[in-house]
Length: 256
Ligand code: ZN
Image 1 (spheres, protein in one colour):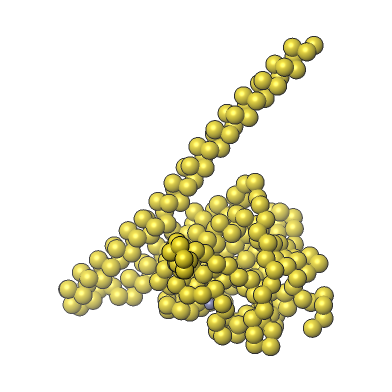
Image 2: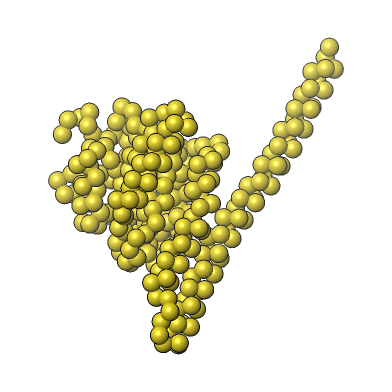
């Protein structure tokens, strides 16, 4: 392959990383996925935003994305390009591996190869979540960045870059996650609605209630807590900076 066509490195902004982790940790029963948006220059992809994909099919070990949703991601990239005045486009995809290793499966390598046919610099990220570290038994998250060559996965260097703020775009995506998860559950329940057996109907309703409570408990509540803590911290920082500013101003005025 021509060297210029090869992807050399992926830079993932910390706020996008945070949103991806939030999404990956939202369920340990299914794989979740999304698209990564950013700019590409000199074979280096910088990821600035993400689009969460709603699952059209809930299977434990497979993620399937409709072409409609892929179009939605492209539209989102166009909007962001206009807002930032940068050539933003869809540069990659991510998905989670709950309770399994971070290594791409043969299905992942196949999906990746298909995407690369259209864009040779397209890449994939995999977040392995809900796994235990062997010695300490603590939960660990592993992340890999890969491309596909000759039906095999090769690792691409990945850098997570510090961002001072969470961008408005990432914040909006994080806030929309509970809504997307609720929609998925409601769609699933809709298909099983009005069962002729009363007991089955009661059971199905109970399953839906349990799922919705789970989303509130595992996604919405921790998100609210994190954001509330962040506001408090920002207020404290602001107070401290104002105080420092006042002190410096006093020092400055006493000199003249
Ligand atoms: Zn996979």
